[in-house]
Image (tube, rainbow, N blue to C red; front, side):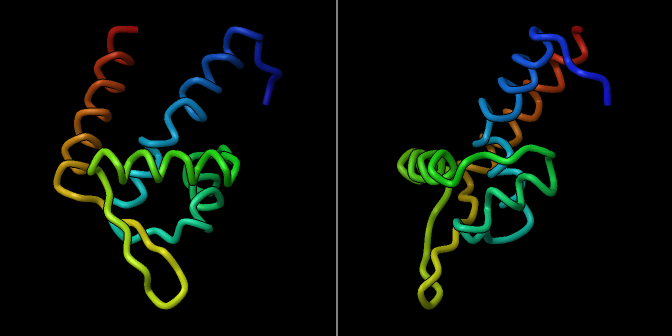
Length: 103
């Protein structure tokens, strides 16, 4: 792949790392997600690797806002979407698509 110009690189970072919440909710749409494995799942699906610290920060914020819920299964903590989270995911996806179409 060709080297990105600085503006395109900043845009890429903003769309990926700046929207970890959208990637996380998207993954939770179809299954519960194990918090520790989330960065690697984001990397596989979306092509960028957020830090574990940033991922945990985003998860705690999403849980606090009622977009996801957490439950322990044994010693592992899993997260899943709430109804409010499904709506936020759909709204976020629509906003991204709408903006892209205007470009």
